[in-house]
Amino acid sequence: MMKAFVMEGIGEVAFMDKPIPDPGPNDAVVKTTRALVCTSDVHTLKGAIGDRRNLTLGHEAVGVVAKLGSEVRGFKEGDRVAVSAITPCFHCENCQRGYTSQCETMLGGWKFANTKDGNFAEYFHVNDANANLTPIPASISDDIAVYACDMMSTGFMGAEHANIPLGGTVAIFAQGPVGLMATVGARLLGAGLVIAVDGIAKRLELSRQFGADVTVDYTQADPIEEIRKLTAGVGVDSTIECLGGQTTFEACVKATRPGGTISVAGYFGHGDSVEIPRVQWGVGMSDKVIRTGLCPGGNVRMSRLLGLIERGRVDPSPLTTHKFAFDQVDKALHLMETKEDGILKPLVVFD
Image 1 (cartoon, rainbow, N blue to C red):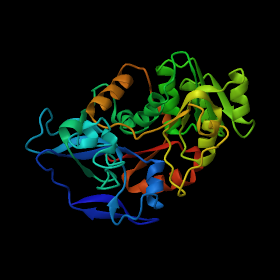
Image 2 (tube, rainbow, N blue to C red):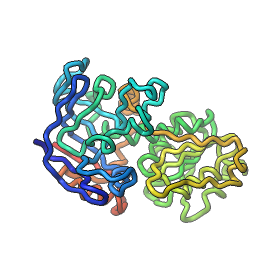
Image 3 (cartoon, helix red, strand yellow):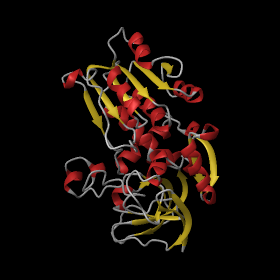
């Protein structure tokens, strides 16, 4: 048996004992060493994707291979591995069409703490292990490698989908962990002017550390007006929405110039619809593109992200503001809900 932290129902959590999972022929079981708590876990607990009963929470974790299915090759028990928050099958029609995050159905690549037990547990199951296990380089600690599982991948996806021209302009709205990684990604992709928008001084300070050229505190100035001043009145080539809020989404549409791209990396966990500001959308004819996405899965993606860490292109360690033992994960989840104590990302330590 193992200990797991579960969603008993909407708004209700508990620790409970569960059997250690067994792998199928193509699967693996990983002994968890580090995990991160995400705002997505808060959305899930509040019912954003419907009720879940005794489902283990968590989707960002690294660990050590404990068991391997008979058909898994290239790994052995004891290997340190990272596993993306998104674990596609790589066989279905959507995967073969190139949309692995939408495996079999919309958002179907997101299995942990959605359609199967997540990894706030002493052990977790990994489907299609040949494609979804990634070796962690010896030079990278588990504390750092765990950021490749979601925060880096999601933030970088936001930048990749933003279609930023080389030397172009981009504004990133919200500088939480995903927004900060989108800021890094925008700089790595060759943006000439990176504008970071948030209302918390510490996050704006970090955004400058991660590559923002200009920061805008929306509590002190209208970000749309500031962006227009910085771009001679035309707006930015690209915007990246990293909160999942109506206000930030509208701001992205308003700040983007005609023909530009609005990239959505935020999780819209509330409401039944999202409104588009009609006039600033050019009444539907502005050639502005709204691009959405769920971070890619698979070990090719993960290996590339870990390579960026290994070669010093990015150091996500400043995102860790708090550390908790596994038996304190409920406290970490509460802090992620309230955003108290200046929390950005809590690291959960299992060993």
